Image (cartoon, rainbow, N blue to C red; front, side):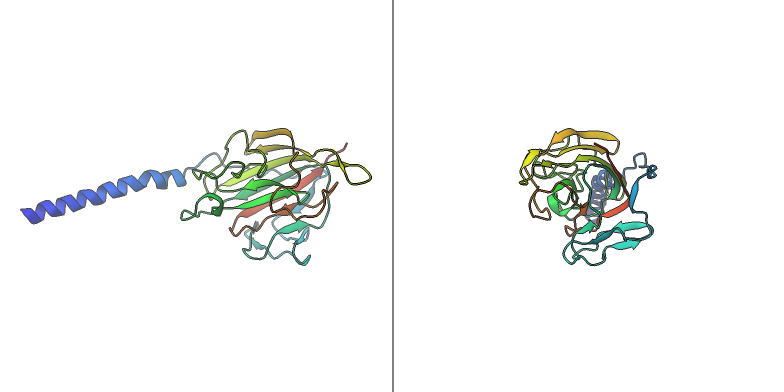
Length: 239
């Protein structure tokens, strides 16, 4: 009788353990309405179309892009470094889609970290911020170190997300002094999370460095996580 009771107790403990894990698994696999790929409008400059990385180069070597193309997507090749566009931009609408890897054993900044740097200097953070708290102005959608998004629009890892970034470069006088700060509007998964925000802090952390630029490249960050990108295009804005 004693052995039967012990077996029953162990069996129920196992059931309770399984039940306690189920909500976590369901949460991680939650399926929202898929993000549709937005086709580049007429006049857009396509930076990645799933076929090649001709528009990009490595920041550290200025050599060919070493990130990986797989099934039409562009994945961070961890350890190769940041990539930048060969072309420079000033005022623009940048569209890109990204997917966070599933990294359940990591937390905070170690989970799905990358970033989109406007002019190579002003970062819109890319991070798995789905049930993953981190420090202020470091979450996904943040103007890194300067302003958090108005709303957390994170989707679970392994689901596509989108950024539409409307950026206006700083204006400089002849001596290189800033006479007008850069501004940015960010639409994340269809929701506006920054509305014409002046970036008064100067270049954000881990930018490509150098003086403040009136024009510059788009930079995507290798921060040690295999984040995936697709459908990257840009429309230059008129004054």
